[in-house]
Image (cartoon, rainbow, N blue to C red):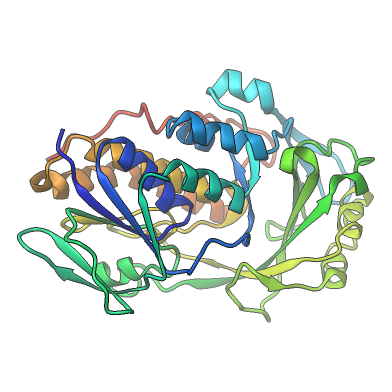
Length: 387
């Protein structure tokens, strides 16, 4: 098997998943992360069975670490905002594991990152590395130049896992990669974490529950965290006067409660228990026409940033990482461009379908079949041939 020298720009969930998968495939991997260290910030994540199954293939250590800190929702429930009527109930937990080969897990982003970082402990994560340019190296190799004027070793493969504002995407394809500029949706999202003891009297507090509002733009989602000790609250509403794109801006709890004052008492009780809230504007982007060029490619939010309504952003990035590693497992340096085009071919249709489906926010509102999302196995899906 050929060993490739691979550089990954971005040490988030997608980047570290790719680092683990590619190292497991026998390659030499270095992750370049622009932050100075990992901090316990960011959103809480719903890992549906397809994402958990992909993570499980990265090693028993990662699988055990994720389960040690995650919660395991009992069901996925839809309820109507004013009457409280239940419109769908999908068994998760043991039933999801039986049906899909993995459960649904809900976890803080920092705990997932910690599990992935520990799995990659034998590799290298270099912090404080903000990409400035991609330069040609010797032969077909690439070399990265960073804002501190340091450079990477020559790379056989470059993976851009650097998020919505990807510097790799901009360097390869221009600022927007051939797609339209990001568009503000007119929606804002609130996020809060509540000790479960405060809301334990509410029905199905151990489930993933989505309260569907009077319009597709209005909703409240709740699910357990930290093995059920906490409950996460995620809510969206229309508000075209606030445009800051950040996951960590402080919000106003009173504003949160006012926005959902007409919701069912069970939903309002969750908001009444919140002490603090984070607030962000939500943007949408169109699918990119291309992800790969030469020996460089993209994954995760760098190529398919998603609205949160199908809970597939992190899962799709992890799926990308697995399929990419499978395409590169036996590739030589000369075969890398063809392998990356085949990776794009295998992932682009599914990622784009989920990206556009997340925009519509109708996923499982009245039931329906989740198999095409939850039943996907990134480790077993047939691969396109390398041209």
